[in-house]
Image (cartoon, helix red, strand yellow):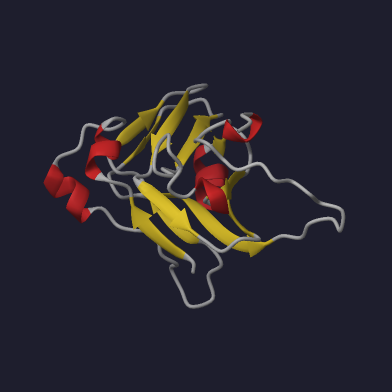
Length: 159
């Protein structure tokens, strides 16, 4: 199964000042056209990013996917070319076992930075990133047994 969900209002409220009405109204990621590969993520609030500034953006979204799949996060090309906005880690990698983790329900955060010379302002619900689901392969001798225990940086934690 591959599907986007909203994280709980309680979890989102830890990271964003949002009303229950705003929570109920924000959109799940979706593709723009029939042949679009990427699912668009939206800002949940209006935001200004100053030159050289980095911001960790809460999306309010979690993604369920099958084992052997990953959700890759990229900046929308128009933000990079027109506004000099980039992902701070270049490509986000959301593993299938990040969904429903004990730290944050699998809340997807996207960290962006302004590499331009002018402040960039975006409106609530502007699209800023896109996620693409893909299958990945493993080596024949792969024998990893560890399970995820949390959110950001949790693959370095051991059971």
